[in-house]
Length: 234
Ligand SMILES: C[S@@+](CC[C@H](N)C(=O)[O-])C[C@H]1O[C@@H](n2cnc3c(N)ncnc32)[C@H](O)[C@@H]1O
Image 1 (tube, rainbow, N blue to C red):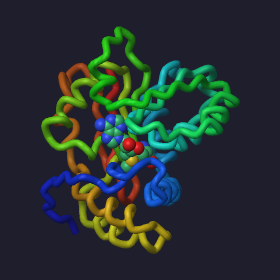
Image 2: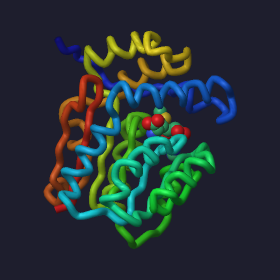
Image 3: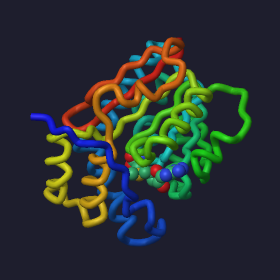
Image 4: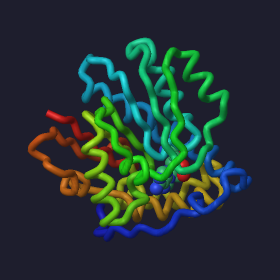
């Protein structure tokens, strides 16, 4: 069964809570648990392996990196094969604990935190292309016009882009109403439903990606609830 759900972006509660608000802290804990339930790291690794096909990236940027836990888990899985990577964790909030950064360093990667709005980052001149830019549960925050600007800006900054976002269809919508069963608190329960309405389906992101003939684009469902978009510069 599939529903014809028009895309609807509404503000998410977590985005408007102070980083130290206990409700925000609970919601970030919920997100970590949800990533494990949704196999986010596996989805990310598969996409990045497909894109790098054996040639190790040197520079990796995560947009909307939150508490940095996904990048740390990626470092655990990939640091031996991708030694010495320089990784940038960008989020408009500075939420990354020093112990998370130390753990990334201990694995041999060099982390840099950029606490800024993604559009301020895109506005900065930078002649260097990142080998990989990725994002998880971030791209769906943007409505049509800023989303098109965001993707255009990212395309100018990287060789590979991957994002894993909510899939806007019946099963994820049903799942989003049930995440209380995984112990998620009220903020996450509300944001999960909003996220599915703001998510993607079909080839919506490919249609917005600039200059598609210069890229290999793959856009598919990822797992039961997610939607993956991978762009590889030719
Ligand atoms: C739903 S959370 C996802 C966090 C993390 N990627 C994860 O999967 O757990 C979205 C993150 O995007 C950040 N964010 C939202 N809008 C942003 C913007 N315009 N620029 C930079 N970060 C932004 C928020 O602060 C938040 O940490």
